[in-house]
Image 1 (spheres, one colour):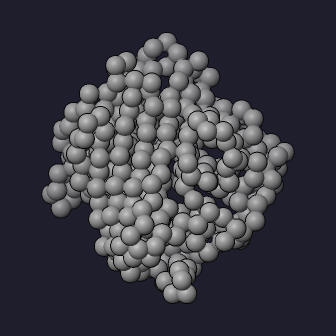
Image 2 (cartoon, one colour; image 1 turned 180 degrees about the vertical axis):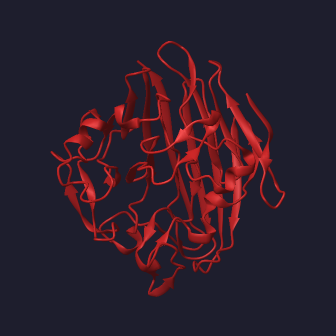
Length: 342
């Protein structure tokens, strides 16, 4: 069953609708039109108790300023080095909003736009037209479809159509905490990736792969995140002990997950499935403290992201699957987060 109501208003007075998708077990997912955000994912633990495993904003009136939300990032998530790339010999120069580099769509970030949502059968469909003010030189039609079924599977389907030659690399920036304790270091994590992507001094992929085996980035077996951090050696360098890692996913058998996150404390797990070639693991280092739903204080290690997509900066790296889409072409991609108990 899908219902809708008014979540709140933006600063300019526009209303934001909220859609609630419930399954037969009483579990539900909430989607809001602003940013096409996954606002809540309420699922059972091993005792059957319901709990929200997705971080979100406490108030609709604060949503524009809230950082830890399950936004759809587009037209391109993560970074493009120096904001430059070429398609068919034509060079494009984007607005750079992170020093000398382009990040998360800059001012056109889809996660900061009001989408138009509707109920279509058993899905919530959200549409947004991007007329590009940051240098892509063409428009793009974005559509995201959410489904949540009786098997506790949240399916995200992306459908982006290019009105000119362009780059697409959308993702969802949901922060997960399966236990609700506020510290995801006690979660166990498996990622089906033998290699991470090599990065330059600015942290941007520059081509090549680095084996993860035996390092703090090794989640080729179900491993406690706290343990991986504790024995990280020089992996984290002088920065915070936190992950912002880009994995090139190993080829999986059809229907097999690419990642598995589990909280022993409450017996909740989450398997990730995708048809995209890469995934970003991000654990919040707590550089900013925010107040989330139910008054919860969100600081360091309050949640983690498993962001599926193309390798960041892949438009400049022919070694990796290309995120380039020519005029009239459509990106179609699916990511599924499947929740289970054990």
